[in-house]
Amino acid sequence: MKIKLIIPIIIFIIILVGCQSQKPKDLTGEILMENPNINFQGPNGQRYGLIIYTPKNNNYQYLTANMSMRYPSFSENKEKILGMLKNGSIAECDIKTKKITIIFNKKINSEVRFYSIKYTPEINSIRYIPKTDCISFLLHPYLYIYNRKTQETESLVTTEEYCWSNDGKTLFYSNDGKIYRYEMDTKRSILYIKNASGPILSENNEYFARTKISYKRPIKYNPPTIVRELKTGKEWHLTLPVEVLDYQFSPDNKYLMYSERTANNFYRELNLMVWDFKNNKKFKLFGNISMYSAFRGFDWK
Image (cartoon, rainbow, N blue to C red; front, side, top):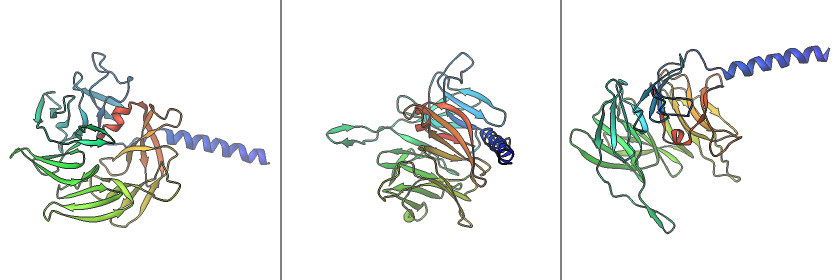
């Protein structure tokens, strides 16, 4: 009798695991990132540049095949892409024409000391500011805003991670284990969440994701990623035995895409995953992601 009961249970578990390994059929929008691995090749065999990946039909489009752009992000209408070229300039690529235009190549004096070694940090986390003619980027330790009309550059706050509301009026940023809310009209920062980093807002601004920071001993190296529904305060926790490097909401606000280190190859192999946080189901989009692609970010619109 026991054996008869165990066999159906095993079959059910196998089916359940198999279902969760298949990506959902209702994934919307396009994912923008640097070429994630050598399995994605351009029309002439290129293995560099940007791709626009459509998860619904598993198609991808190659862009800037001869010129890699780091930290890429879509414009609001998805007609252009913002990113950084290898020479450190911030550029914009027109998706239809493939034309690349330099929009910021000014030198900002920034120097970091690591023990006795001094080095110049790299611009990163480049983004359009919604509903404005401005862009934002990080150059340690500051978040900068560049006005494309006036060509003026302003340092705003000290941070390493940030996100904008969909109207461009509110900034969320992390600093020293805390997340702050900054209102552009009042120019004031207000403490938002303690013991947290990595703020991300959903497209409709109804969900907020963060990484929990714990200072209790022993310190956890794989802290949970938490999604909160702002209206109700309800939360969903993503706890994994491996490290989550970056995450981004889907354009329909139903999923959270994230890159994770794999346990079998800690230093090189990464997976790009999708989390259905309301049903706590995880799906793999593809594996063997380049470390550079994961650390240089991605966008999903």
